[in-house]
Amino acid sequence: MNPIPVTILTGFLGSGKTTLLNRILKEQHGQRIAVIENEFGEAGIDNELLVQDQGEQIVEMNNGCICCTVRGDLVRILGELHTKREAGTLRLDRLIIETTGLADPAPVAQTFFVDDDISTRYLLDAIVNLVDAKHAMAQLDEHHEAQEQVGFADRIPVSKTDLVSTDEARALEQRLKRMKARTPIKAVHFGQAPIDELLDIRGFNLNAILEIGPDFLTDATHEHDDDVTSFVFRAERPFDSAQLEDFFNAILKVYGPKLMRYRGVIWMADSEKRVVLQGVHMLMGSDEGAAWKKGKVRDSKILFIGKDPPKELLVDGLQQCLVAAGEAAVKAPQKPWLC
Image 1 (cartoon, rainbow, N blue to C red):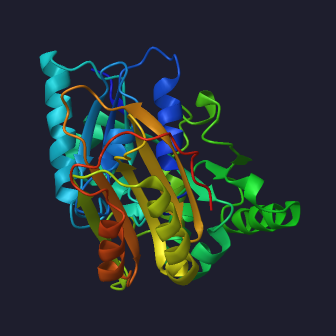
Image 2: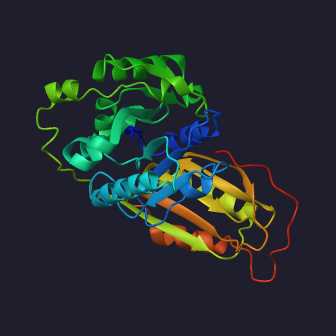
Image 3: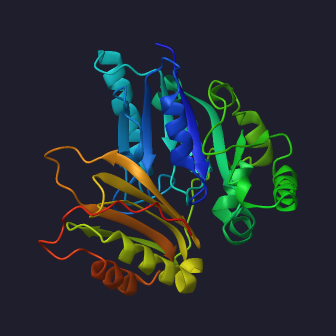
């Protein structure tokens, strides 16, 4: 059978990878896509946000980064997907790997060349690196992972350009071009990128990579900054939306710079739909998600990633925003938050 084409979707924390991935999954391209979803935290959020209208195969890899601590799981999962495809129990036309925002794409790409079985069964089509125009300059200054993601990119969609000035957008584009002169760079709005610019582009060139880094196929070392940690807050009671909004507005004024990424699926007392929370540093927003399914237990799950995030303060504050037992009647819906 023909090798399965693979797209590695990278981008630093909060750049909009899941939004872009949902855009791809919604497109009427007629292909069956498997998604390997990696999150830095102990529990996955993205799986609940991804479109699965056509029975897509979604595989979660949590509590570790795909480029190091759970890389062995990647090889195992790739083998299992291929076995199911050969047996006819899984229709699989292509694979997309969404890495955690802290991943170095080099060891992930290396997987498709150093293992004989994987290299004959899969074809690495391209590394697509989403860049957050609002926060990219600081991320590139502070985090080597952000630099590596740009360095290995075959396509660079730039998100959130509407949140920066024309001069800031131009300065970022010039910096990206200095880092990766021949890689196409294009602004995207909420993941609205043409599919033919992301898939089947044959963008990954192993020979070009080896010219830049001759040790690409042999060096698998990668370490994360020790001060970046994560934790997940869970609750089985609904939140009071007004109290929760006030709490986040207050906490972000003081601790926003430490909160590199926070996201969650939240049960609000005033809504019959899930509320999807997304945030990067001081920038926070929420939107309505899918309706809660009848008979499904409702709960909330919020993932925080940051540099020494104030865990105790966050947990205590969030618990105080929960509706007391027996007071979970649905109230008038509140408008989405935006900070």
